[in-house]
Image (cartoon, rainbow, N blue to C red; front, side):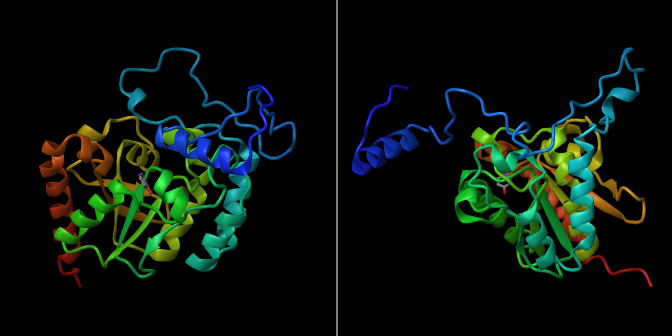
Length: 273
Ligand code: URA
């Protein structure tokens, strides 16, 4: 772009015009190498198998070789957090996830809900509304999610978070590497909250949490088991359709409703002595 000098009022009006037209991310003309600048750990691509995988293997997600230093830093920061407030602070201070530097307001979006919730809801990643308001699931998708949780009698019994804590530019799906870097924080949140069950909202959440490449349409509607990376925690997990999908495909709402009904029934089931 040429060096056009704009007054603050003109710049404001131009930005408003772009925002209305859906241009909500700004990119420089030339790329900035933030890895060379030492801002972020170098991403390492997921390992690709040299030979074709055997028939049964491809559905299992290959653990991405996600910048091991970033994962180690996330693990250390997460382990040091002794409650959910401290965990939120640790995430806010964390600089190892590239998303933090890729167009989000650079504010971490961790959670909303109650700190002793029996249900943890895990979405994919924050969008524009979440970035603006600093909380997960507060835009149109979040409002639909809230209505569905309320209809199932769950709205006051949830702790809501995402697989990544910064908005992916242009609302793209978070990559497996970004999710793997943030995963120690998600795991720590589960360990601290001690929910009875997980609701995995959308394909990107279900695939990341269950370490599978199976699609959401085949995962939803049946119980999966989530296991912590050290194997110490096992929890029932219900994958379901993302509310953004339901807004586009309202006819699919009945399937999401069936998922939430199964979940509510399980949470309300008396515990065996
Ligand atoms: N979609 C998500 O997956 N998470 C949010 O927080 C908002 C929209």
